Structure formats: C-alpha cells, structure tokens
Figure 1 (cartoon, helix red, strand yellow):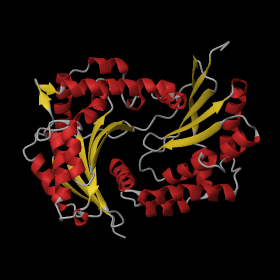
Figure 2 (cartoon, helix red, strand yellow):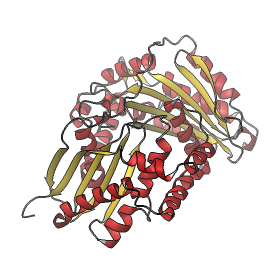
Figure 3 (cartoon, rainbow, N blue to C red):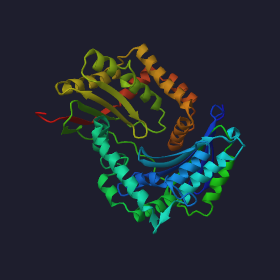
Figure 4 (cartoon, rainbow, N blue to C red):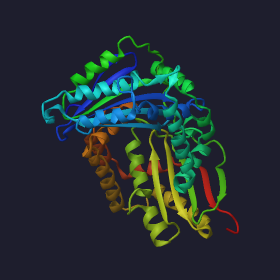
Length: 427
C-alpha cells in the first residue's frame, strides 16, 4: 500500500501535503504554523488565528466574509491554537464542497484556497496594526477562555500538574498563554508578532478531501512567491527527563465538592521510539478502557474514585492519571492507583484485558477515517513525529506487542509529580 500523504516543498520551510480520500464530498485546506512554545509570545500567538479569521483586504469585514463563504455552498473557516510537545501550533482552515458537486462546476477549491491565502497573507490592517475592533474583541474572548479553565476543575488540575511537572520546559507553558499578557496586546504588537510568525514559523499546508489538490497548490505557490523566510529549523521536541529527584507534591485548596488527584509519570519513551506501541497498550490496560484496571478495581470494586483514567502523551513521554475523589479516599485512591501499575509490572493482567486494550486502540485508528479533519489530524501527527505510518500500519504494530514488552515498559514508568486540588477546610 502506497503511503497516502504526498508532500512537496514549495518555499523555504513550507511544505504542501495532500491526502485524497474519495469517501468525502468536501475538501479541507489547513495552514499550520509551528513555533516553539515561549512565554514571551505564546499569548499573542494564541490570539492571532482568531484575529486573522475576521477578514482580509478584499473582504474587509467578518460579515462580508460570512456572505462570501455562504455563497460558496456554506463553506466555513476555523481557527485554532494548540500545544503539541514543545511546539505551539497555530492554524487556519477552510472547508467546502468539491468542484464536482457545484451546480455550475465552479472552481470552488481554488476560491477556498484564495480566501485562506487572503486571510493569512493579506489581513485587515489599520494604523500599522490589525483592526483595533477585532483585536479588542478577541482579547476579551481569550481572557474569558483562560478564566473559564479554573471553572472546569478537572482540566484545571491536569494543567496544574503539567505546569508543576514540566516547570522550566516549554511544555509547562499554558497553551493559551497568560491573562495578564493578553491585556498588554495592542493592534501594533499583534502585527509585529504576525510579521515574525510569517518569517520564522515552520509552515505545513494540508489538503484533505476527495478532489484534486492542484488548483490549491497553484494558489499557495503564488501567495508565497517572494515571501522572506527564515531557514532556521525547529529544535526537536525534548522528552521529559527521567526522574532524578524526589517526587514533587503540590496541593491547592478551592471551593470544590470533589477533590482532583492527578499523578504524573515519566518513562523516557516518546516520539518515534519503537516501544511506543507497547506503552500505549500498557496505558490502555491500566486505565484507558471500561475494562481497565483503574476502572474495574479503583472505581467499580473499591469505589475510591468517581473517575480514574490514564492518558499517554507520546510527544513528551509522560503518563498522566487523573481522578475525582472524596477527601476521605485521597490516600487510599493514590495507593491503589500505584498498586495497579505495580500489578502490570509483575505481569498481573489477563489475556482478556490485553485483548480489550488492543480492540480499543484499534477502534481509535478506525475512527481516523470518519472525517476529513480527523484524517488531517492523524497525518499532521505523522509530520510532527517525522514518521510515515498509516493507521493500518499502527494497528499491525499494536497486534505484535507481546505480554513481555508491556511488562518491560511498565517497569520504566516512574512517579514524578502528584497534584491535588481539594476543598477548603470547613467548606
């Protein structure tokens, strides 16, 4: 089977990728900017995609942009900022029907690419900066988003564990930056950050859909012609270092009815390491399914947690276990979670547990083909890891994982940091 992701370099550190899949009637085009996570610019970078999606020179308002998209059979634009390992990924995407399904065979794909290029390379500007109206609007939205995290106690606790465990590492920086930094952003400082982004970011353009990518490719070639680009490559993602200190412990008190206990483990297996399939199997057996050890024993049999789930970050080589517990059960839950990990280290898991974990992971790869955005997300991960595996190849690797390999990787998992969010005394 040929590898479906076709790639070509079209400018310095700019690559155009395409995956053609006839099951869809749409095409999706995404431009992804990859930059190092840095405290000095993470916040303004998180703001930029939302500001850029408001319009461009030939479409100078969000209302006009919406009308133009509607006329293209309901095409739509999405903007995002996320963290993968030590990188911040900023993206703008546009999705619309393929040319074949247009009533008059209009060149829809070409028009989609032109809009996306306009949003990115010909944005709305005024007074040497972005539109003050849109910058202020998105600043308020970003502050609301950052503040909302503390109200979602589970994600807040996971974020605090990562910031504590990875303090001093790029991965420890919050994905959307800092509230106080949002307030400092001006239309001019946003424009300066944008100029730097266009010059220095690694750019990956992905075309995913049922049609031909040729017209979109031609539009991007034209847009990038003459663009000044830095040739400095990104520094590879650094795995979280193996524990060389005592386990870190951090406790916070808030008005919560249910405590959040999060355990962070290091293992030194990340990226394209050949042991990745075994680690994923181990994490699924431990706490990735409804038949996992954490679910069956800690949650169901012993009733120590409302939920107890393990998740593995293959970019950093970190295993997280997060749980919701009553105050009276905190220490019991912690001890039992560690006991379940130790059981795997000793080979105390059944063939049925291993089969269930395998089935769950294989189903996750089957779901890659459910949408053009999920296909894009999968292959973007391959680009970041510099690997060339299809979902079918990943499933084959999982099927070959042995019991002994699961035991060996489990023994490499070491508790690094414990974070507890608990209720205030007397509350």
